Length: 104
Image (cartoon, rainbow, N blue to C red; front, side, top):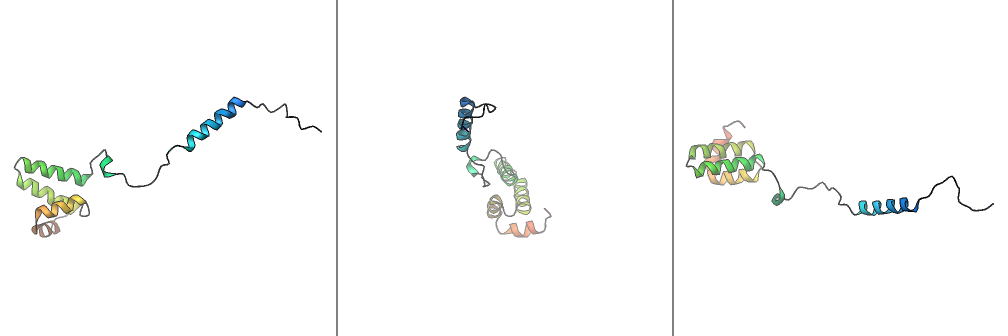
């Protein structure tokens, strides 16, 4: 018996080279990781951020009552957000009393 290649198998060296090249490209592709996005790279505003920006706009236009109500809603609806912490600071000691009596 001889170890001659089987004539039924068609081997194309260019096809094999292309497959090796494709595998090399795919192995260098970045993997998708489940992590929180960098806040600096976010492309959209979160609801608490939008509410805080709205309250700041009310402040700019001299609408203090609307500003206060927006900040109170922000604290009641999103109490764990960083914008709620800012809103609580701006509302002062009356924030806890006012927001506890409101429904989110």
